[in-house]
Length: 536
Image 1 (tube, one colour):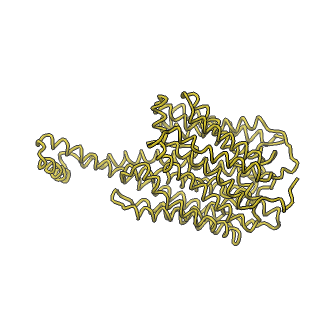
Image 2 (cartoon, rainbow, N blue to C red):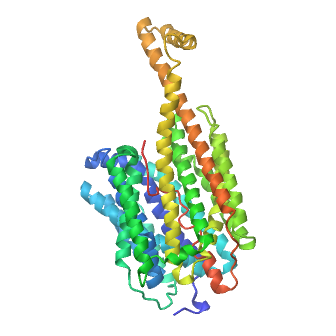
Image 3 (cartoon, helix red, strand yellow):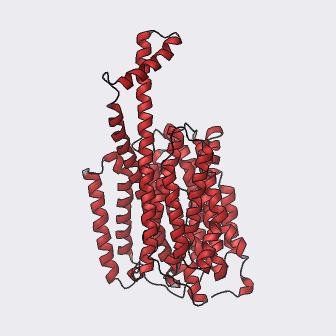
C-alpha cells in the first residue's frame, strides 16, 4: 500500500542513503587490487589461483543481476536493498577476518551475492523519491558519487594497506555500513509491488547463471589459458548453449524470469548495445590509463589512483547536466554528443608518450569525464522508458548486465591487444638493433661512453649499454602499443555514437510513464572492477 505524500522521506536523504551504500561497495571492490599482493603472502595464493579471489565475487554478482532485479520487482526493492547491503557488509567484514584461502573464496562469493541483490534495486528507491522533472539530475548525481567510490579505493585503500593492514581495509567500512543500513530501515519507503507474486522460474535462473558464469570465467582466464584452448572454447560453448536454452525456456515459461517482451522495443535493444560499447570503452580505457601511468611514466600505485580525480570531478560536476538534457530535450542528443566527446578523449590518449606531463593527461581525463557524464544518464533513461513499471527491476538488471559484460569484454580485449601490439612493435624495432645497423651502433657507443666515463670497464659497459638499449626499445614498443589500443577504444566510442542515432524519443506522457523513464538511471556508474580484471 503506497504511503501518502506526507509520509514520504526527504528525497535528498534517500539519495544520500542509497549513495552511501553504492560508494562503500565501489570503494571495497576497487581497493581489492591493492590488497591482493598482501593476501597472497598471508594465505599462500599463487598467481594462478589468486584470480579466483576476483572471480568468487564477479561470478555471483554478474550472473544474478536480472534475477535479483526480478525479486525486487516481486517482493519489494527496499527489502532487497537492505538485505543485500547487510549481506555485503557482513561478508566484507568476514573477508578481513578470513583464516584460510577457502574462507577468503567463500566470503568473497557471499559478498558478490549481496552486491548483486542491492545494486539492481537501489535506483528505483531514488526514482520513487524524486518527481519526474528532477530524477535525471538526481540520478546523475548518484552515478557520479558512486563513481567516486571506485576511485577512492586505490587511494584510501592504498594508504590503509601500506601503513596499517590489508585486513583493516575490509573492516573499515563496517561503521558507515551499519549507519547506512539503519537509516535505510527507518527512512526508506518500500516500493509498490503491484500485488504481483509470480512463481520463480528456477530452470531459467539456473540456465542464466550457467551461461553468464561460463562467460565471466572465459573472459578472465582467456589471456592466461589461450583464447583458442579447449578450456576456453568449452566455456564459450557452454555460454552459447546455456543462453540458447534459457531463451527457449523463457519463451515457454508461464512466469519467465526475464520477459523477452522487453526486447521487442528497438530503443531498449539499442540502448543496451550502446551501453555495452560505452562500458567497453570506459573499462578498456580505465584498464589502459593506470598501467600507462605506472609502467611508462613510473607513477606509484597511489599516485596513479589519485591521478584519476579529474575524471571523477568532471563526472560529479556535469552528471546532472546529462539527465537534465534528457528530461528537456531527448535521450538521443546528449548520448550522441557524449559518445563523440568520449571518442575524442580516447583518441587524444593515443598521442601520449613517456615524456607526457600530467597536466596534459588531466585535460584528457576531464574530457573523458564530460563524455561519460553526458552519456550515461540519458542512455539509462532511454532504456528504462520502454520498460513497464512492474518490471523496472529486471529491466534494470538486464541493462546493468550489458554494461558489466561490456566492461569485461573491453578489459579482456584491450589486454590481449596490448600484448599482441607490443610484441609486434618490439619485433620490428628489434630488427634495427644488430651489428649491421649504423644507427644502433652510434646509440650503443654513446650509451657505452656514459658508463665508461663513470669508471666502468669497457667490456662491462658494453653489456650494460646493450641491455639499456634493449630496455629503451621495449619501452618504445610499449608506448606504440598503447597508442594503437587507445585508437581502438576511440573507434568503439564512434561506433556507439553511430548506434545512439537510432535511439527514439520516448518522453513520458503522465506520472506513471514518467516513472518508467527514470526508474534506474545511471545504474552503477562506478569505477570498480567489472566482470573481468587483468593484472600486470
